[in-house]
Length: 333
Image: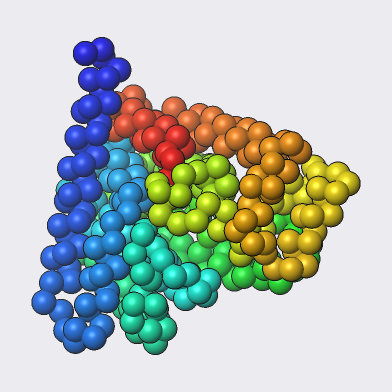
């Protein structure tokens, strides 16, 4: 076994241990809570799987500046609960029928239950966060709260863009910086705070998280059109079917000419396209260079994230954050 493959095996094992510890705490946090009309669907959400990216980033960031994984466990669980709060409410607003290959809460139960579950997830996230032992707990809570504020602002912009005929790539990037990037940025920065990082270390982790978050979302946009439905757990091209103005769509609209540009404008006018036409739009994305542009954007932001990470002291946790960056941006689901 080569050193590279040996390190990958070690990192895989460590990531699995972190996920297991977070999963265990999520179960403990909600065990035996009543009424069941609220907590059965809430537990259903938390048992829905997912990559647990944000808790892993938080715990590794803590360790990278001298803290411990166990010291960050409550904050890690809190960030995962908060993430699930956003998903439950997003699904209601998007009228999504499935999430991670399972029925969404508002379809398995009803919208009223889903709204309440989302509200309770937010409350539980704060309760779990406040179990963190840190002399900087006030800063941690302030940062966490700012994350909630910006995620809501990002979601509002996302919904606003659905009804606007003109949205620029720059506006879209600003929206995902709040909606997606902020959650990842606060994960890394809170980890640094729990680990008692210096201001320079916190700045490096914040910058790392911001660029990683943007690259992560644009990679998601790419997967929606070039991914495998079996791995994604949803229809390929679902963003196009819903008429969403993603990075790919807006970049294609900027680059396309003639009939291709006309077809893209029809998507805006019609509020989406049928599933059978997804292949034709993928060809437009390819021919005008939008897919290449998205891949270049992911590459560029990844480089910036890694440049920020390089400012931390060398060590296993920093190396694992670098490795996890590679895993996230080469995933197929």
